[in-house]
Image 1 (cartoon, helix red, strand yellow):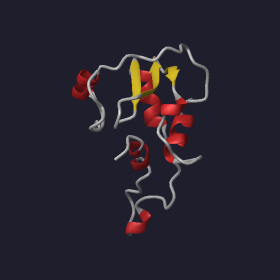
Image 2 (cartoon, one colour):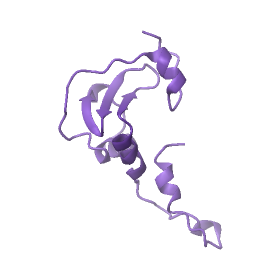
Image 3 (cartoon, helix red, strand yellow):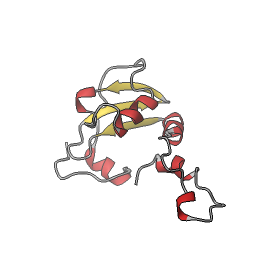
Image 4 (cartoon, rainbow, N blue to C red):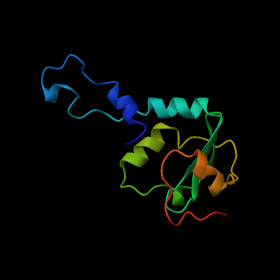
Length: 121
């Protein structure tokens, strides 16, 4: 499951009388919930789950760090690329230094799973 599914489920047709009426056939990706999270959560660090390589961070809704080479790989226009673009990935940076990530502490507080290669620092 993805966090943006919260936006998708807002489009559920509760008056549907047939299964094909429950959700729009091709709903557009909406990242409104994720954007709201980035604005409301003081600091968000995005890391590749298998290796814990930090590829982005926001503070108070503004990007403070981006490492495009470490961002999730997806074909041009793929889900991850659309998500990051909707969240302002290509906008200005407020800082450029990578945040520190304490993998062991984050394992206790994280959303999502960590891969085997995400060794503690």
